[in-house]
Length: 125
Image (cartoon, rainbow, N blue to C red; front, side, top):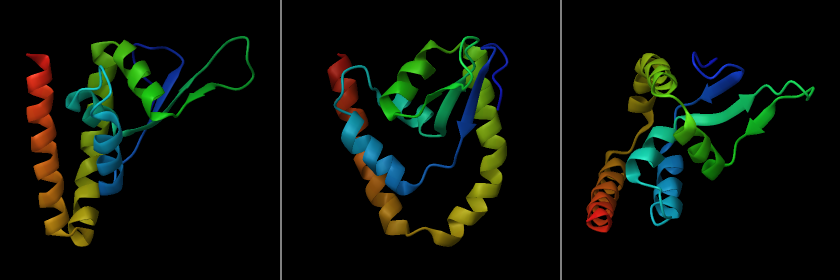
């Protein structure tokens, strides 16, 4: 999707898998500046592409930490548009996921997220 405020920037959104969530929580929750909010907000972004006038190919941003850094610089309207586009598509994804999810795995992830949020809140104090 083309971003409304950041001209020449395209965000590719995806439905994150449980594996994506687990990997992000494990690898990024202890990194400085990586709050649970920013980690979860950016899980839906597969990559950004930015048109650069001097280049024939767009700049591709697809490393997780680079996506987080790029996301932080976006205007609020662009962030909202990404979320709204994802939310619209999520209705379709939800029915697919419901057919393929292990409830025990979800509960384990929820417990890990709760634990990490507590740790994150303690770090902020």
